[in-house]
Amino acid sequence: MYILGIESSCDDTAAAVLKNDTVVANVLTSQDAVHTKFGGVVPELASRKHLESIHPVVEKALENARIKLTDVDLIAVTRGPGLLGSLLVGFSYAKALAHVTRIPLVGVDHMAGHILSIFLSANRPRFPYIALIVSGGTSAIYLAESFTSFTCLGRTRDDAAGEAFDKVAKLLGLPYPGGPHVSKKAGSGDPSAIKFPRSWLEDDSLDFSFSGLKTAVLNYVNKVKRQGQDLNLENICASFQEAVVDVLVSKTIFAARQYNTPRIVIGGGVSANGRLRESFTHRCDLEDLEFFAPDLNFCTDNGAMIGFAGRHVYEQSGKMELDLDAYSRSPL
Ligand code: KG4
Image (tube, rainbow, N blue to C red; front, side):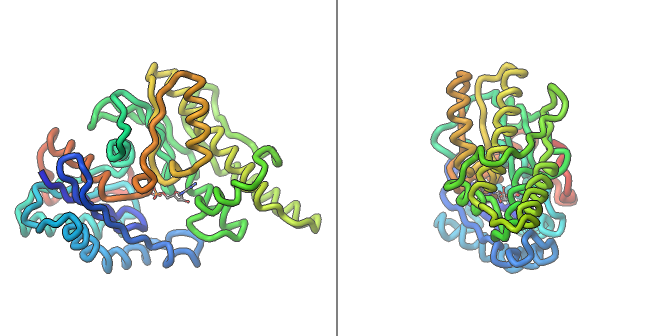
């Protein structure tokens, strides 16, 4: 079975071809160069860029897979959540393809894609598992019980973890997207140099809050500047990153204990973070939990995870009617 996966929920236009569960082509165009001067994604520019890229990206994926559109058995496309203008480009394109070719189409939840992206890597978990999904648009913890059954246990009440990385990068004068730049600087800093706050919320809460941490970094930067001192970017980045990682790892392990689930999976752009992976590996070892992290190219948005999740949606519920709409908020 050949599955064409299409993703356009934010600022990456992506398409992939899977042969059953194996990725045979994975193509992505990043819009980072367009958005970097604004320090974040500009929705109107993002949808315009998707319009330019969607057809060439899908063509390239088919070419790399050495198949024709008529060989495709199923089209899977991100239906939401995300920026509506961006989503609509991929969603409408996929609907048009399905209408013209009569190939069945399924709409896939972007979060489900991230929760299952671990299955695109060689080291695959068994169900159930606790999934921490951390990206620029969201941060949430899920209990995954099968390929189509996910329960949200907690989510961010304000900024997503990736958004916090991006905003801190912006205030430090680092390029967008900020995560990789903050992480690089953090590599040569001291994570205990500055005591930034950790937001634990209520005792047994699995929700997150990162906006206070971002403000704490801003206040610290302003204070140092007022005192006429130089900023030590490496120490700021390392201390900020440590505060984010500490909360993400502790809450996810707490969820695994609360739900008696012996394995943890991470996904989303921030799951590429080296310190996050290192900390999970270390603490899961101590707690006797299994830990799974996707290959780096499947952390950020991609069409392969949509194709993979789409196959399971199709097996469970059949094809989607073509009059359904995209959505900006996830029902998951
Ligand atoms: O999942 P993703 O590609 O897009 C969505 O937001 O849906 O995630 C992008 C986010 C950005 O906020 C980016 O700064 C962050 O992931 N990111 C990282 C790293 N690589 C990407 N954050 C921390 N450390 C990284 N190495």
